[in-house]
Length: 294
Image (tube, rainbow, N blue to C red):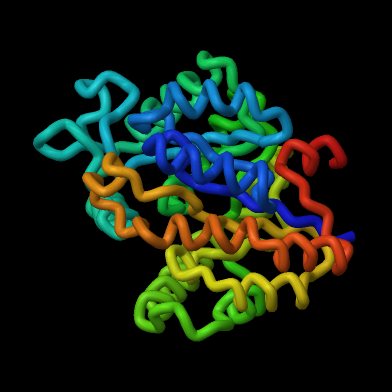
């Protein structure tokens, strides 16, 4: 059986991102979203999620953008001089290698993020990481521990399948240099956490069989998604996406994903894409249905 989880990252970042995600769910193929507990539009996202039955919601574990959820004094190794997150995955990996990243503080912060989502009345279907930070050495183990602690039964394993990455690369509208750079990052994650699925299985945490979308983050094309669906593997595949509207609040942030969010929304809601899903016998599911079947 061919199962597809289409997860929209960054729910809660801004109201424009929220609107785009819910439009991609109601009118397109998005089945799931992951919520930033420290997002500026967190409360609005929670309210919208409760009025959108059928959209699965997970937690988007964050160490890179915004303010911490835990008390700042207890997670100082994660913060810059302004008291905010400011490191991308590469910076966090370097800090980890130098012994400057305190893992107990990571666990405290992520525990607070998950608890905030739960306290808001959301039962998370799974965990993943903002910029895939949960895949870094030592951090994936923390995410698994927290999943067990909070009764969360699934986790994203951000190990991109090469054949699926190649399919998504179809189309001439993307910036080749960006895609190549992100492809290198995807291969790096494979080296850092190649045993991640086995680790999750040992702890009874479910994962998808395949994953794709890192190399095409911000560069998704209609042609690429069409080729992916036409060459879709048996089993369960997660495709990550970042739909949204570039509202004023988003434009004030440092994210490079601005206009690309609306482009992705158009792709995800395109009639041709929805028809291909149906004609190729692909079943749209989420991590919740994956664990129920397991």
